[in-house]
Image (cartoon, rainbow, N blue to C red; front, side, top):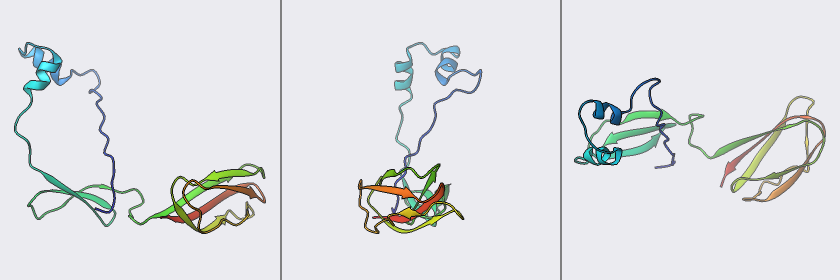
Length: 147
Protein backbone atom coordinates (compact mmCIF):
# COMPACT_ATOMS: atom_id res chain seq x y z
CA UNK A 1 0.00 0.00 0.00
CA UNK A 2 1.18 3.50 -0.72
CA UNK A 3 -0.18 5.20 2.38
CA UNK A 4 -0.86 4.41 6.01
CA UNK A 5 -3.73 5.97 7.95
CA UNK A 6 -4.94 5.73 11.52
CA UNK A 7 -8.65 5.03 11.75
CA UNK A 8 -10.17 6.43 14.91
CA UNK A 9 -13.58 5.42 16.16
CA UNK A 10 -15.36 7.15 19.03
CA UNK A 11 -16.86 5.34 21.99
CA UNK A 12 -19.67 7.82 22.61
CA UNK A 13 -23.03 6.49 23.70
CA UNK A 14 -26.22 7.44 21.95
CA UNK A 15 -27.64 10.46 23.75
CA UNK A 16 -29.77 9.30 26.68
CA UNK A 17 -29.24 5.67 25.66
CA UNK A 18 -27.93 2.64 27.51
CA UNK A 19 -24.66 0.90 26.81
CA UNK A 20 -24.73 -2.61 25.39
CA UNK A 21 -23.57 -3.92 28.80
CA UNK A 22 -26.42 -2.10 30.56
CA UNK A 23 -28.90 -3.60 28.09
CA UNK A 24 -27.43 -7.07 28.73
CA UNK A 25 -27.88 -6.62 32.50
CA UNK A 26 -31.48 -5.47 31.98
CA UNK A 27 -32.02 -8.63 29.95
CA UNK A 28 -30.69 -10.97 32.63
CA UNK A 29 -26.89 -10.98 32.33
CA UNK A 30 -25.26 -11.39 35.75
CA UNK A 31 -21.63 -10.35 36.03
CA UNK A 32 -19.16 -7.51 35.75
CA UNK A 33 -18.41 -5.51 32.63
CA UNK A 34 -15.15 -7.47 32.26
CA UNK A 35 -17.02 -10.78 32.48
CA UNK A 36 -19.58 -9.58 29.93
CA UNK A 37 -16.82 -8.49 27.53
CA UNK A 38 -15.16 -11.91 27.89
CA UNK A 39 -18.49 -13.56 27.04
CA UNK A 40 -18.52 -11.79 23.67
CA UNK A 41 -15.47 -13.57 22.31
CA UNK A 42 -16.22 -15.80 19.39
CA UNK A 43 -14.65 -17.06 16.21
CA UNK A 44 -12.48 -14.61 14.33
CA UNK A 45 -14.10 -12.84 11.40
CA UNK A 46 -12.85 -12.98 7.83
CA UNK A 47 -9.54 -11.32 7.01
CA UNK A 48 -9.59 -8.13 4.98
CA UNK A 49 -7.16 -6.28 2.75
CA UNK A 50 -6.73 -2.51 2.53
CA UNK A 51 -5.28 -0.51 -0.34
CA UNK A 52 -5.02 3.04 -1.66
CA UNK A 53 -6.50 3.51 -5.11
CA UNK A 54 -6.91 6.84 -6.93
CA UNK A 55 -7.17 8.87 -3.73
CA UNK A 56 -9.40 6.41 -1.86
CA UNK A 57 -8.77 3.86 0.89
CA UNK A 58 -10.49 0.66 -0.22
CA UNK A 59 -11.09 -2.71 1.46
CA UNK A 60 -12.18 -6.20 0.50
CA UNK A 61 -12.35 -9.63 2.06
CA UNK A 62 -9.26 -11.71 1.26
CA UNK A 63 -10.04 -13.69 -1.87
CA UNK A 64 -12.94 -11.50 -3.04
CA UNK A 65 -12.67 -9.66 -6.35
CA UNK A 66 -14.62 -6.52 -5.43
CA UNK A 67 -13.00 -3.56 -3.65
CA UNK A 68 -15.23 -1.23 -1.59
CA UNK A 69 -14.37 2.44 -1.12
CA UNK A 70 -13.98 3.17 2.60
CA UNK A 71 -13.07 6.87 2.59
CA UNK A 72 -11.50 9.47 0.34
CA UNK A 73 -8.05 10.65 1.31
CA UNK A 74 -8.22 14.43 1.94
CA UNK A 75 -7.22 16.22 -1.22
CA UNK A 76 -7.99 13.13 -3.28
CA UNK A 77 -4.35 12.46 -4.13
CA UNK A 78 -1.61 10.27 -2.81
CA UNK A 79 1.37 12.20 -4.10
CA UNK A 80 3.87 13.67 -1.67
CA UNK A 81 3.06 17.31 -2.35
CA UNK A 82 2.84 19.66 0.61
CA UNK A 83 1.49 23.18 0.95
CA UNK A 84 2.36 25.25 4.00
CA UNK A 85 0.53 28.50 4.66
CA UNK A 86 2.11 31.25 6.77
CA UNK A 87 0.05 34.36 7.48
CA UNK A 88 2.46 37.15 8.41
CA UNK A 89 0.88 39.90 10.50
CA UNK A 90 3.93 42.13 10.20
CA UNK A 91 7.53 41.98 8.97
CA UNK A 92 8.95 40.31 12.07
CA UNK A 93 11.36 37.45 11.29
CA UNK A 94 9.89 33.96 11.70
CA UNK A 95 11.81 30.72 12.31
CA UNK A 96 10.28 27.86 10.31
CA UNK A 97 11.08 24.25 11.23
CA UNK A 98 10.28 21.64 8.59
CA UNK A 99 8.10 18.90 10.16
CA UNK A 100 9.64 16.23 7.92
CA UNK A 101 12.26 15.87 5.22
CA UNK A 102 11.10 17.94 2.29
CA UNK A 103 12.19 19.84 -0.76
CA UNK A 104 10.57 23.20 -1.55
CA UNK A 105 9.56 23.75 -5.16
CA UNK A 106 7.97 27.20 -5.04
CA UNK A 107 6.72 30.03 -2.89
CA UNK A 108 3.89 32.41 -3.67
CA UNK A 109 2.36 35.38 -1.91
CA UNK A 110 -0.94 37.22 -2.03
CA UNK A 111 -0.98 40.19 -4.35
CA UNK A 112 1.00 42.96 -2.67
CA UNK A 113 1.79 40.74 0.31
CA UNK A 114 4.91 39.12 1.63
CA UNK A 115 7.86 38.01 -0.38
CA UNK A 116 10.38 35.92 1.46
CA UNK A 117 13.98 36.77 2.06
CA UNK A 118 16.02 34.68 1.71
CA UNK A 119 14.39 32.54 -0.97
CA UNK A 120 14.07 29.09 0.56
CA UNK A 121 16.71 26.57 -0.40
CA UNK A 122 15.25 23.70 -2.43
CA UNK A 123 17.13 21.11 -0.36
CA UNK A 124 15.68 22.01 3.05
CA UNK A 125 15.94 18.82 5.05
CA UNK A 126 14.08 17.41 8.01
CA UNK A 127 14.02 19.63 11.08
CA UNK A 128 16.23 22.28 9.53
CA UNK A 129 15.41 25.75 10.83
CA UNK A 130 15.03 28.54 8.30
CA UNK A 131 14.60 32.16 9.32
CA UNK A 132 12.08 33.87 7.05
CA UNK A 133 11.77 37.65 6.98
CA UNK A 134 8.75 38.84 4.99
CA UNK A 135 8.95 42.09 3.04
CA UNK A 136 5.33 42.88 3.98
CA UNK A 137 2.42 41.40 5.91
CA UNK A 138 0.21 38.83 4.18
CA UNK A 139 -0.29 35.17 3.35
CA UNK A 140 2.59 33.17 1.89
CA UNK A 141 2.23 29.65 0.47
CA UNK A 142 5.25 27.35 0.40
CA UNK A 143 4.90 24.38 -1.94
CA UNK A 144 7.12 21.31 -1.89
CA UNK A 145 7.34 17.55 -1.73
CA UNK A 146 8.02 15.14 1.11
CA UNK A 147 11.25 13.22 0.64
